[in-house]
Image (cartoon, rainbow over all chains, first blue to last red; front, side, top):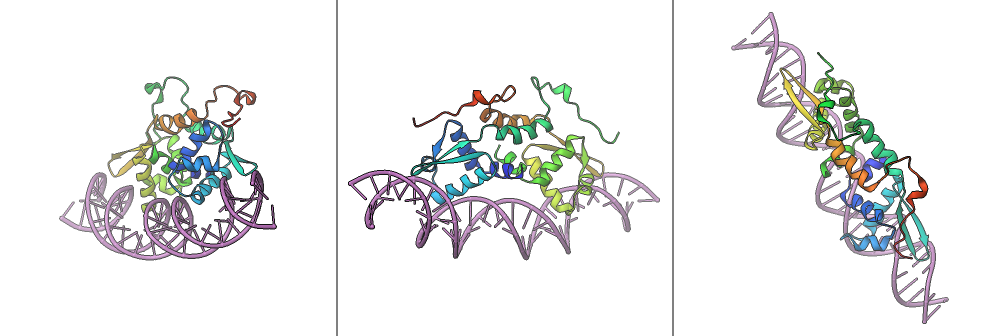
Length: 102
Length: 102
DNA sequence: CGAATAGTTAAGCAATGAATTAACTATCCG
DNA sequence: CGGATAGTTAATTCATTGCTTAACTATTCG
C-alpha cells in the first residue's frame, strides 16, 4: 500500500504503467520511450515491481514486464473508493459535509 | 494531477484525508492526532490544499479543513479506472494480457 | 570459447522532501 | 489596548530520491 503510493508519485513511473497497460514490453523497449539512462529505468522498474504493480519475466536475452492485473484496483482504487464513495453521476447535493462541531 | 499523486505519497497526508473524510477539523484538531509539530502539519495541509484535495475556511480563530468532494474521484480514481477498467467482479479470465510480440 | 547485446548493481553527487525551532500574523476576550 | 490562543512563514538541518557513469552478470550466436 505504502509502496504503491510511493511508486505512483513519479510521473515517469505512471507513464511506464500506461505503456504496459497496452501490452508487455522489454526493459529496452521501455527505455526507448524515455530520455534517461538504462540504470535509471531499471530503478523505476524495480520500484514498480516491489510495489507489486508490475511483474517481470525473462525470455532469453530479454526481460519483459507486464502489469499485475488487479493490483491497482486492490490498492489505490480500493482506497480511493473508500474515501470517495461515489457511485452515480456525482450528485453534488447528496454529498453535504458532516459538521463535527455544531 | 501531478500534485495529487505527490500529496498522496505521504502516509501522514493520507491519514489526514481519512480524518477529514469523517468531517471537517481545525488545524489544531488534526495536529492532536499526530506527533509532529504544527509547522510540519501546516506544510502537509498546504500540500493537500495545493493539490486541490482539501479546502480551508477560517472561522474566527480557527481554520477548518474539509475534503474537496469530487477531487479524488476526478483525479486518482479516474486515472486508476482508466488503467484498470474493472467493472464487475474482477473476472480473471476476461483480463488476458495482450502480447505485443507474437 | 569469445564478442556482442540486454540488463542490473555499485558508487557518487545534486536536488528535493520533511522535520525542527524561532519569529511572525490573526483573532478573541478581559 | 494587551495577553493568550491558533496558525503560518522563515531559516536550517538531515535523510531520501533520482540521476549519471562504470563495472558486473546473463544470454545469444558466430
